[in-house]
Image 1 (cartoon, rainbow, N blue to C red):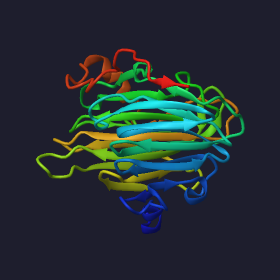
Image 2: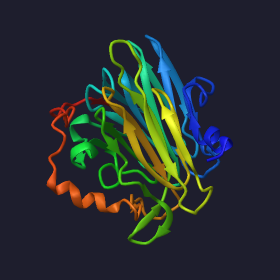
Image 3: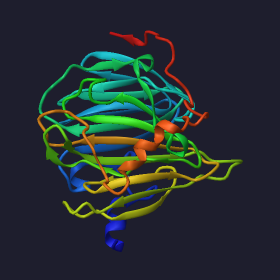
Image 4: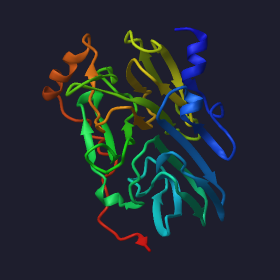
Length: 303
């Protein structure tokens, strides 16, 4: 791992900021073709307007609530207190649209994006419809909120999910990759990891993220200590494990997109570690999970 690669692919808090955004990752700044992520922090009474351009976007509250106006529709997002307190509702904005966000009480909002060509309608995604999945067992147990997963919510290119890993557990394990197109076996997808780590008694948390070379693309090689607000870019390579240190739950938001005609998340496990999946059936799921489940249905849209 070179120091230059580490600086290029691990962006500590503040290093990926731009303009009004605490995080501003675009295809241009990342050096790839499709995936984007912005994190917007609004003060009480704050408003922000942006053009979607050639990308589709999902507006996802990380903390707080907001109103999203797009294509003549208004979506009231109830949001949540934090990423560790519950599933959030969200709004989808298509390409070539103007989006306006407003928050009465302020908050932090993720804008997950993907460059695409097909224009889909603006839509509301209720928290009650987000599948909450438990993956792995034992100390590989983690929770996945599949709000923008392929097969769950329709987008043209964008795939986005949230992962919560209890303190002391490993996720993104076994290490896996999706950096080449192999029909029916593997998708070619760029990926962004955005982290938040639960603190303890006022002490910030931390975790670790590994990306190792797969022999393709940039041969990405990163071992990063990550803290809340950090970003790791994965253009290629085996990614995982994502390690939550004991006492500090780890959250990460995954944003993926790629050139494939089909919007699929197909992965290849690292051959040295794929065997671990066979051990899971003999272990219970971590009893701390799920940290929370999707709420009962509510109607949160007006037109």
